[in-house]
Length: 337
Length: 167
Image (cartoon, rainbow over all chains, first blue to last red; front, side, top):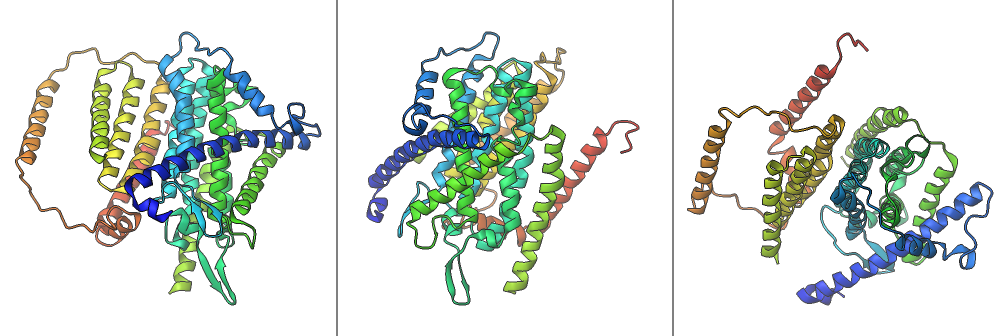
């Protein structure tokens, strides 16, 4: 493997194959996340959920996808035609690009990654910040006041919570001393007889709480799904979208959900290290647990009002994040001298 | 490979720059400016300035331009304002263009005001090297900039406050 990386052409072959595999895996995972969500939500609401297509309803998403693909592709008149089509493409592209820097431990000494770069996690933020354009332009191009309102809400929400999201991770960087995701996962401590990797949530529990809240808001998920609040905005920026273009937004939302869960696992739960469990299974297990937490939140909490959302972002999460950074800095200086 | 990427990014940047002034719809101008920002970030990456690349995307493409979009969408699909003739601006812009081409010509002739500093390419452009630079060598300019930004923020809040709004 390392010989292949040294060779220029071999490097490209490895990267291209890795990207294709990644694309396939993430797409499949997305489909089953949707299935998982629908079943879990069904159980929370005391109904069976999808169970007709295939065993346990597992083929439901394939059926839905085929149905959407064969729907007529409608671009309403009086919309901004080019932007209307480009906006969902931006959403999908931004969602998948983040996976370029996410490493996954496959076996005990085999780690998979496409790009292992110095700025690591900042790149994920950069691509997720492009997601604003997808939602905002989709809302603007639809030439519909509900869509525009949804787009505006989304833009304000994403900008507000991006700050808290970034601040929540600063203590982690300060402890590890690197932005490279592999370094963060591989962070080891020597506590008495124990020497090995630890889940960083033990050192930055407040950082995790802020990250989780901000991440739910960043991915427009309930209880922060105001951009598509159906009672007041019909479907928000999604109102005019049908068929494949709708599916692209839908796909991007679930890919983003998996991305933030995977990042949380890498940053706070020790990545693919879990006792003697094979790394790839440990990683999957932790990601599925976090995804379930997401779905649980959706099934439990009512949607926030818009001013509550903004107040939470600017007056609670942001000051908390700054205090967290300062406290971590003081403790680090005190313990390391 | 790098040359090909450079020319693609440079062409995108120029096309976006033309788009900013050529489009009559403000929203399209803003989107052209976003294209310019992203093309510039690619050029930074080619110069192995990784951190500047990410900062360019997060700050300019991700935050500043979104605020531009916000303002334009709030104002509605407004017609281009300012039908009046430009008085002295054409002459001024001609002056700036001349200065720019003069500088370009000087650069092509190999004129350098200062030798570029020797940079260690293994750490150049990384987060660590920029952080160390900001908090040691350039600490005072850095802190002064933060005060400047604070003043700007306070000024914006003061100006946007309505008359008699004492809360």
